[in-house]
Amino acid sequence: MRNEHQIYLISDSTGETLDRIFLALKAQFTNFEYELNNFSFTRTESQIQQILEKAKKRENPIILYTIVNSKLAKYLADQAQSKQIPCFGVLGDLILSFSKILNQRASHEPSGQHVLNEEYYQRIEAIQFTMNHDDGNQTDDLEKSDIILLGVSRTSKTPTSIYLANKGYKTSNIPLVNEKSIPSRITSKNFKPCIVGLTTEAERLFDIRKNRLNSLKENESTEYTNLEKIKEEVENSKKIFRKNQWPTIDVTRKSVEETAASIIKIYEIKNR
Image (cartoon, rainbow, N blue to C red; front, side, top):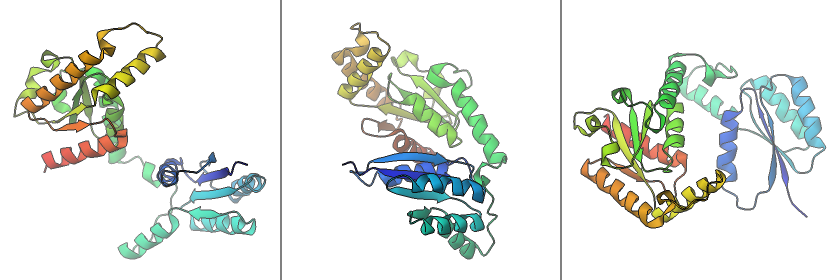
């Protein structure tokens, strides 16, 4: 019999924070079968009662919540306890602790992290810039980039760029075909944006490219999926990175988040 848990993620905002916390939590357990039930913008006792009624009818329910209104959070916790449903607040104790350390009252305002301030608009601007500078589409204003990523095809340049953009970094990415495919001005030592080379193991790249062609129903054998040519591509890219003294990250066994974190560290060191 499957021991599947029903996970209820209850948030008074978009639920993005809670999603990420649960992803980090579940990664700690190898044998964890679950079904997710997401409830965002939960801001009334009536909404909570409806969710709890559903949860009570399911086997092995567990509730995680981010609700900044202390009264509503207590209501959820009390009601869940009365129905014997495990219930865990993610932010409550943390907000209280910070309130004591900072010696100020928390606003307890839902969606507080999504306020339309200068930081928000800078992030939107970074996303727009990054989308316009994806895959070498626009190179005439690369000087405006915070970060420029270089790498052969399928080294996660685009998803990493988008992730960085969501962190507020204007990111351009350029596919590395050969040395001539690099805009000459970025090789200057006076060029300000942070340039990072992405590389990966040839065998892994071969699998990714082959799967990519299969998904597009293009099964023709080309240099794009020729292992020897791929090895040559990867080695040439490394030579170019070394020649220009650009920091390099091997993305073979890294998630986009891990790669982005390494890039941000490189960026911060460069801009100290």
